[in-house]
Every structure is written in C-alpha cells, then in structure tokens.
Image 1 (cartoon, rainbow over the protein chains, first blue to last red):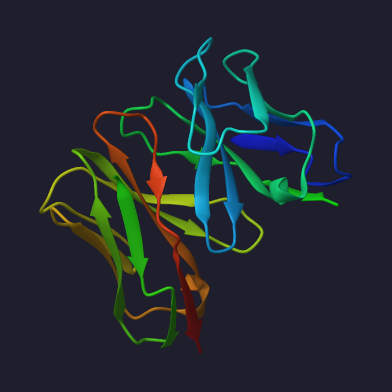
Image 2 (cartoon, rainbow over the protein chains, first blue to last red):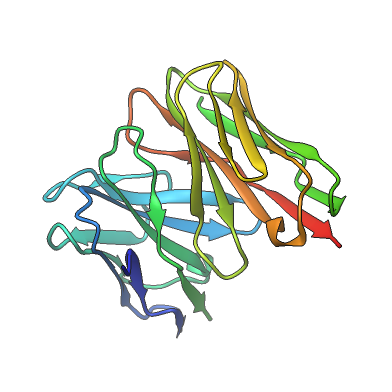
Length: 113
Length: 110
C-alpha cells in the first residue's frame, strides 16, 4: 500500500525556472494538502483541496499554483522559482477536512539557487 | 488568532526516563488535536487524534491527553527508537486547515 507518493524526491532549480511537484494518493481520500517545512517555522499550509474540483489558499500561497487533477492527484506548481522557496514540500491527504488525520508523503527537497 | 506552541523545543532523555511534551493552543473552537511523529528525512506519521477535554489515547509507550488549553504527550520508559520530532496540530471548528506547532525534538540515549 503506497499511501501518498511524491515526485521528485530532490530538485535543484535556478532562480526564475519553473517546475511542478507531483502528488498522488491511493487511499481514496477526498481532501489533499500541500505544506512546506522550514527550520524554525514548522509546517505551513500552502494550498489545500477539500474535495475534487475545489482548491483554497492556505497560509503561504504566494508564488504557487495548484491543480486537483482528479481525486488521486494534486500538483503544486512554481511558475518562477525564488531562493525563498527553498524548502521541503510535503503533500498530504485525508478522508475529509473535518477532524480526519492527515497522511503525509515523504517530501520533495527543493533548492533554488 | 489561532496558535499552537510546543515545549520544550528539544528534550534529551536517558533510556527509561519518563517525561512529557507540551502543546498549548489558542483556537476559536476545537474540532480536533493531532499528534504526529516525524523521523529525519520522512514525512510526519500520524499518532493520535483527540477531540474533547478529558480524552486520553495510548499507543505503546505514548499517552496523549487533552485539556481545554493544552495537550500532553507522555512518554513512559522511552527507548532509543522513540527518538524523533513530535508535532502537534489543531484543527479549528470553522475550517479544514490544520495549524501545526514547531515540534519537540526528542533524543533518547541508551
């Protein structure tokens, strides 16, 4: 049982380049999330999708876009990467957005030079 | 403003030395409080959900408790394999968004 799968695991970008982080879950969950984790800042919500066809901004959405492609997949796009976006990105899913635990992938480590 | 604060930031214990981690929260209505464990290079792993004051959950050497203002994660007779960062998160009743604390990094020495 794969759970939440994120690709790629590591990525190095130059300032101004774009890329898409991919996330897929096989638990038939309705809600999906993108977080970033930085030292001293904890996990911060970028965007989330309560159900297929809906997306909403989290705490730090600037510089990012998302697409809920279908129930399984939720992608995060950086249109023009900046050094401030160097971080570890986690995708998560839950059965619903009402007090259901989140299940996390193992992250994408992104460095922007 | 909804807020979660965990203490201490770091904790070193000897194997077998019991202790507690604290998660204080301020939220406009609590839908749920979650505890996670995170190992280096991995995503957070779900441990417990607590819904109301007075509730307790146990798993092996871990026991989570909840009051109206804080939650404790009690670790009884810890082993080196309990070394990890423990994260607390709250979900306010008016939103689906979780708010995470910054975590407590636990090191258990043999």
